[in-house]
Length: 236
Image (cartoon, rainbow, N blue to C red):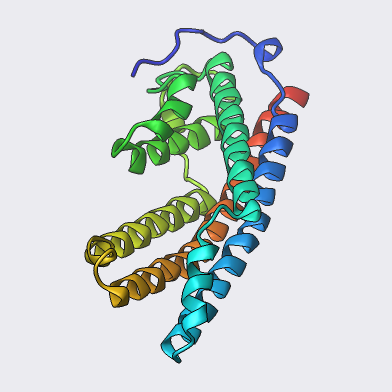
């Protein structure tokens, strides 16, 4: 992907991103808080599984009923979608700024700072690569020497923490999903397989939510630092 040929357009072209960061922080923060609904639901299912294991036949019916649409989980999902929109808005604006500031030798356009998040498979790697570029370019947003020395800038630990926790979350979810495939296949014929399926699915919640929380906090922190870099450049 080629860099935009904007040249050094000056500070008048740089757009404030403080408000967009606030939207990102609020959206991601609400998404993390709404995960409480997922934890409560997982605890409820685990309680029903324990009752079934102890011979409570009525708990099996309650387990089936619990799979109906849960308003809290629906709201949690909608908040998560809203958070994704705010994150994309911030990344696009931040990408615009480093281009408009005249940073040379950028490899990706603002659109790709967002677009890679939505392309299967490569979304595991490319958002991290573009975020590293965004961080390094933002750290040298005042440089006007037409070279690529900015690529030697160090990257915040928060960026690495965000990516590592995201990868672990993805790995855990994928591993537990594949390991539960046989239970899902047998669920219509074997009651025990159904119980094993729900128990395994519950494990994903308990593992993934802490990792997702860690990833979300790291995201808020490193985007705040980039926002401050841009604000400092504008206000100097």
